[in-house]
Length: 138
Image 1: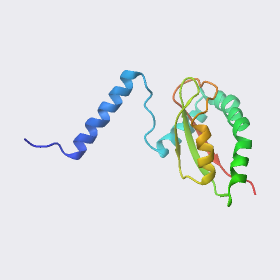
Image 2 (image 1 turned 60 degrees about the vertical axis):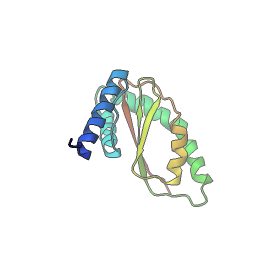
Image 3 (image 1 turned 135 degrees about the horizontal axis):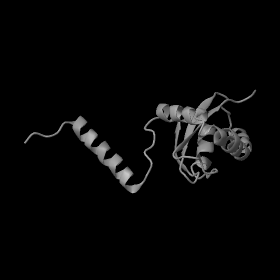
Image 4 (image 1 turned 180 degrees about the vertical axis):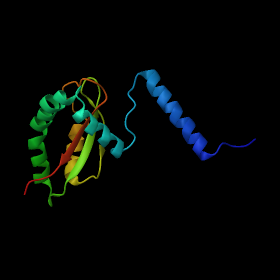
């Protein structure tokens, strides 16, 4: 009996995971940072979600994380001032489902620990992708 090759096994496993997610009503999320970033940029520009993004989500994020980011940077012995980006996928209740990042400086690790347990105002659709690009003022 011929054994299936690795690619066939991988495809079958992925199909099973996706089918199981759909059956349980779980959202299928981006599979990479690049895909999540693109989805986040689309959610920023989509007329159906633009107002939520600009007037609800970004102000909520800013209010909760401005001081936290400052405290994270201040707690580091050698603060990293280089920019980084991340994307958070939100469910229909505003809970963070998953986070992707382009790199993981210490300040991101500090923010990520809190962000994983965050609940934002419910988005107009789920999953909703919040794309954040962080640059630090000198």
